[in-house]
Length: 386
Image 1 (spheres, rainbow, N blue to C red):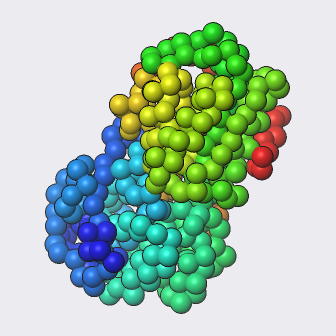
Image 2: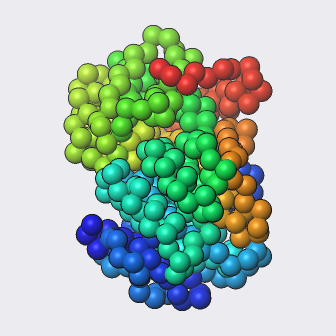
């Protein structure tokens, strides 16, 4: 693999090796993009303060000693890469916050293809300099590889986000994406039937909204299912268009899909597609329509698109990463366990856009707040498949 596709990050100890919800971290408002390098058995020593935002050079981080013991963490990101302003960047927020609060060192890897997951997971598990206390696997697509690797290395602790791997050395973190998606769907369903304008967008009176997914999978269908349910709860006459681009790092595909939906009358599109969603935002701006972000507050992580982002369905992947590292640092990591994070645990939710979210009518926000509580109270059962 290209040496540049391996990310390097180290803590105060200054030594790195290998190629390799309840009290979670606070949300950060910036996103960083880091370059990566591939597959060597050793990495140079680096220390510093922040990841490289240009995408060139090595990632650097500062770790400060806090409560808990020293630990080495290996991070394998999902395809789509850092700088997506969404899923991977949210995971990195948790890693960086843990680095600030605990005495840890970390390395990061950024696979380009799903076929590379197993290689990176094995590389971290095999490493002895450093010896990794935890290997974090970000994304459901890593589950198959981790099922094999966790069995090959029973003494190595792993964590995975968005999947459950039945192994005594794997901590699993899942989210109720459908619950948070219901809320943004309800917002879309209410606004598309109104005469509404804000920032660079406006509704068109067609009572049509859209959903753009990345890879068609059970997980991403949870986003679509919740969104559809929320739209229908707002107004059963609203039409929901839907398409899957086939990847999480295809802005051009996202833009094409969104433009097609806008041309069919959609005025608000929700995406669950990683960096592919960057193209959805671009299309919204060109068509003077609206979009809804995912995983992080994308009106902040994608500021150039803030004038069309009504809200984002935030998913606290950072909490999962942070909590797993905290457990390792404090010596109470629990393999074989599954932690589910939904609205009640503040693992998912709706955040209104930084630039135009204030324009969303208060009566709409009130209805969404009521739905949130109804879901938590069990009065509303949100489907997990479209």
